Image (cartoon, rainbow, N blue to C red; front, side, top):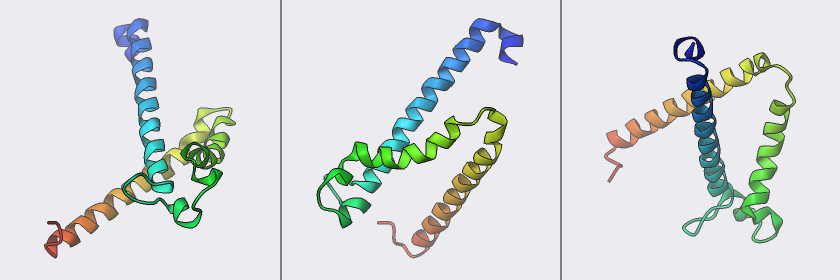
Length: 115
């Protein structure tokens, strides 16, 4: 639609901005995963609760260990139409997460638990 309405230069600009946005989101998601798995200075992560030292406590290794098996099958797909099921399940999980977060917030607010 952008190519038809605004021309090929704007379509390229749109595609580049989408790529930059997706890369930024991926970096943020990987950072969140790293904080949950390994932790930071304030708290221990899930993995560091069980393993105190070693290669598993390195953020790069742990995030790679999680991301590689998840992203590799997506890269092996020949057609983007095959991603429809993955997209639908991802959207469903995002909606479920939002609903659970809202319900938990409402419960805490009703108990006057948010100080």
